Image (cartoon, rainbow, N blue to C red; front, side, top):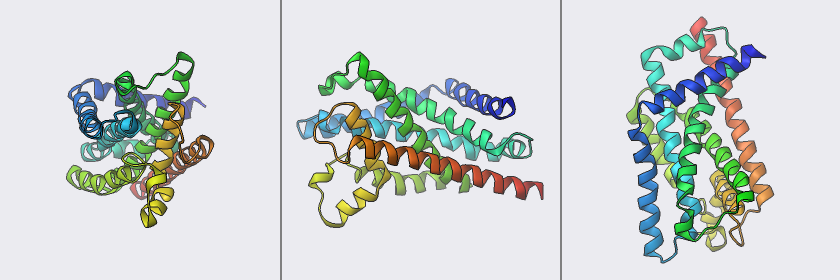
Amino acid sequence: MSSFFLPAATLWQRELIRFWRQKSRLLGVIASPLVIWLLIGYGSNTLKRFYAGALVLTVMFSAIFSTISIIEDRREGFLLSMLVSPAPRTSMVLGKILGAATLAWIQGLIFLAFAPLAGVSIAFGELLAVAGAIFLISFTLTGLGFVIAWKMESTAGFHAIMNLLLLPMWMVSGALFPLSEAQGWIKALMWANPLTYSISLLSSTLRFPNVTPGPVESLVVTLAFGLALLLVCGMMAAQKSTRSAA
């Protein structure tokens, strides 16, 4: 068991140390969604409606910045040394994803401190459920970032793909308008969008009224999506390891 968990814990710790040496990332990750939320919220005269979407955007930005490290590790040769080590590939992938997800989770919790500004009150007994939802969303978005970063050769290409994919996903996830107000193919797209269930899960734990999809359905889809991404990441690492050995 130690041969599995030790590499994962080591890579998890490495991600945290790397972030600690780049504290300026915290400002960018928190400030951008905060500004967007305040502009949209005050512009529509309701901060509460967009709060869950802004919090997920914070987590998304953190996941984007954190998974860039995969490209940097490849350039520096660290990724190759990982792949030729005897450690299980799933263990290494899990460590990388958990490290980045932990950073996204922490920054999501920092954004959670702005909840009273939106008129969102969280009882102490509900805090664990909210924190758990944020971590699950962080893990899922980090896994998605990992899948994309694994195929990228440059950070510029990575940013282009992430902006092309993730921002539209966020815009049609219920962050800007609820599923009940969507029409036609946009509504169908929202139902098929995994991020819709992530925002609904967070909204449910924050006790927002009339949340669609429901909390159980949102939890199941978000969890299944996260596990599927972890499996895909493990398969890609194993395939890359085989090619490196050859």
